[in-house]
Amino acid sequence: MDPVQVIEKFYTPGSETHTILVHHSRQVAKKSLEIARNLADPDLDLDFIEKAAMLHDIGIFLTASPGIGCTGDAPYICHGYLGRALLDKEGLDPAFGLVAERHTGAGICLDTIIGHNLPLPRRDMVPISPAEKIICCADKFFSKTPQHRDKKMTVSAIMAELFAIDPAHARRFSGWAKAFKL
Image 1 (tube, rainbow, N blue to C red):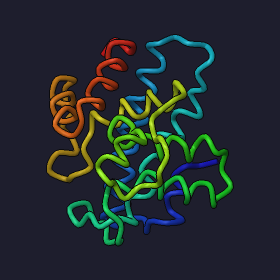
Image 2: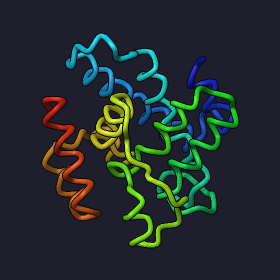
Image 3: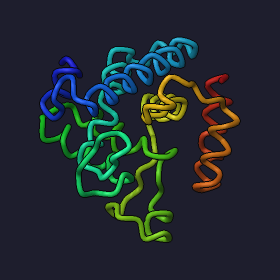
């Protein structure tokens, strides 16, 4: 499976959103592979990690995010579970869809979804597998906004952003950063 071919079923090559998505996804894939290789865990599937990282944000076009060229109707927070639905419909291994669904923030737990009345399905969407955690963590280092897309964030800047959203996100990310020696 070629993840760029999957992306191009939903994004017009050369369009603003396609360019933003593919650039960001390549950054996340590279960082994810760097993390995985540093862990030296023979059970990690590097091919899966690379492909899943390329597909993790496939649902962004369904959101109303004009700053990155997305003209959909859903709030941006929905792109993960919407991406999962797309990947599942494509008949890919369900593990790809789980990466897409669980990467938003540092994962979103059911209590947070209910407590903040988020427009998300009522289920935990927190990374569970090592690949999900690696990709979710790697994603935080890179922005999709054109003016920031080539600037890699620091762990402390990521922690501050996540803490402002939800302290639980910051704690989860901090644990991964320590485990992954970032």
